[in-house]
Length: 280
Ligand code: 15L
Image (cartoon, rainbow, N blue to C red; front, side):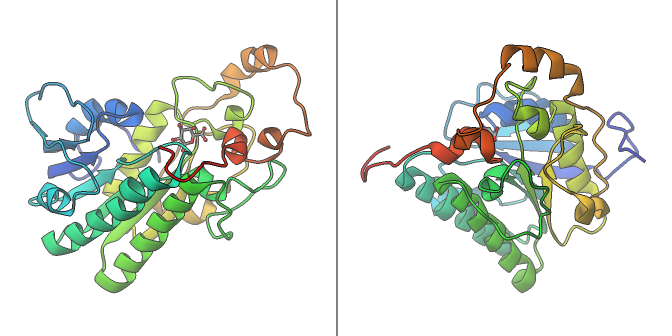
């Protein structure tokens, strides 16, 4: 049974949820939607968060600032962690925000007794698999850059915090969550905003999450990712990229199969770099 987003009795209501990366692309999408599921939504980012609506708490913080992150987790029931660098680029900013930052988050969760985190990982953890392969969350990682490596680090770190301290994490290997698919690759990787919300809510409300990895995609016809092992989360996508296929294929009629961005699942990320030391 699909999660009915508008049924107030479907899941748990939280006292206080923390959303990091709340000023980013997907943070702005989830901000009003998560509010329906908690009394207080604590929002954090390094970028401007605008004005607080009723029931919102604004807490600007840099993830590399351990003390600030510690304060963020105080009094929180669960976390949706979208914060950090979200694209491929030079190593240093990714190291600080994504690697040091996710360590700060889990240490703070441990200290404050937070029991569940939804971690925005990425399909770029496995970006160097080919587009003619169907993979599972259990296949070895094949990151397509520093960004993907940092997300693989977050997945491993969260596994350790589950094994050692019992903090549950659902790692969402998000595909391409945009209003519509932007190119042919996204016919496979697309995750609608409504399905993103369904996925996050499923991970927040599933009775048992343990440490789970799930690919964040809608019910697309072209499939590279097999989510069978994550069915316990109860995520049932309702949307599909199919209605956008004709327009997408018309806009991009030819594919150059010698282009690594066409061959590999990570698309354009696989050809980014090299970056010089000090870049960024
Ligand atoms: C990601 O992880 C990025 O955050 C997003 O901007 C997209 O580029 C997406 O992957 C994708 O693979 O399409």
